[in-house]
Length: 574
Image 1 (cartoon, rainbow, N blue to C red):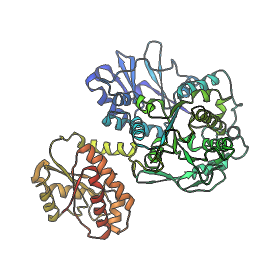
Image 2 (cartoon, rainbow, N blue to C red):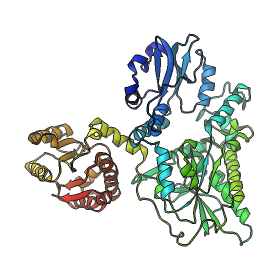
Image 3 (tube, rainbow, N blue to C red):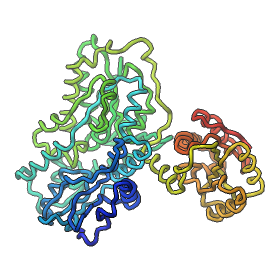
Image 4 (cartoon, rainbow, N blue to C red):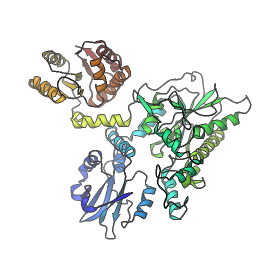
């Protein structure tokens, strides 16, 4: 389960002399983003004086600190002891290394556990984005949603550390859910016997696991929607998981957004927070004098996924959105704009035998926890009169609207920013008019050369992005070489580089070549170009050159002409 890596085999230990204050952030950034290290360990005269984690660097960028501090009060254990490592990792869900420091203050090595790549990739993406936005990614997106939505907002957060600490304390005190010796681990670290206890029904874990594996999503313009499915546990229609007890018609909606616990990862449809909450509301309504409320489950695994839905769902002022967030995302301005902000930590800690009802975090829970959370949320709604039909609702708020019709999540933005780092596009001077064109250049011809010369009459610098389609006549390397040679005399006014993963994608390239329409992908390509290439590089012109002269290529050009001016980018056909 755990691997011990001795000090002499570690690549992430630096002497303080090699970690000067004026370049600490850049050194740490390279370690975390490109070497995927867990933490940096800083020594002085052979003694470990501190460490820097990926979270420390993100806070440095996101909180706009003046300098990156070395953490000298970090957690560690004093010896190579797997039992102590279990307790350590029980407290720190997002840590995958446990440093071992002896009594002389020397680093002897680290205990490592398997990296959860979903967590690591989210950390790296958030780090890259925070570096360039100078703001914590999720906080920025939550703030943007709060500032632009029509919906009335209720936010909930859970302080994870006290919950995980309580679980670790119960393990140390000998509180167990049965003797695990001799039990084969079945799924998610539990045996079948433990799954039976967790789910409250014997013999159903296999079916749950199979359906869980069939729970798929599709991305349309960066927005995640659940693919319709019908099963014993999971039933999804129209991009969302169903809520039991939904009325056919309603006076208003309560829409839940969040990650795993919100969508109900490990329970039946009728055991989600939303279904329990809907049942309580149906009982509360009783007579016809109270409003009919419809509870909608828009939860989805991964923060970026449910954020994408929040930003693109059509919401009205009569709707209430319940959003599960992290405390560190909250600001005074965000809280002030909400109907209510609640802390669910005590609700978790009051649950009897909590350890038996969580997998590895508060967000990975069972039906018992869901029911307690639904009851707590209802008490808050009732106590603060949040279901009063007249509450903050005025004329004109019935009309539903969306903030935007696409979404660029942290993973996409991070990938594009790293691509820009690779080609030094973020270091370009701000002055001057910048233009861009995307080409197949298969091969680069005299016609392409004339188009470039025409562009340089309007732009000070031109970026030519070549399609990375591997099914063209010439390879990418050959096309790059030929294009660079053809414009060599124009100097640094022309920059020719590969288009990357998210610009003029392979799917669009294939669509043009094979005359297959992919409208949503073409629109998303323009959204990404406008927001990221226009925003971070300051490109203000997009020049279009027809190379295949077919209807799909013309459709792509028309979409560019229609969308890019919304981002302040002028489009011209050559």
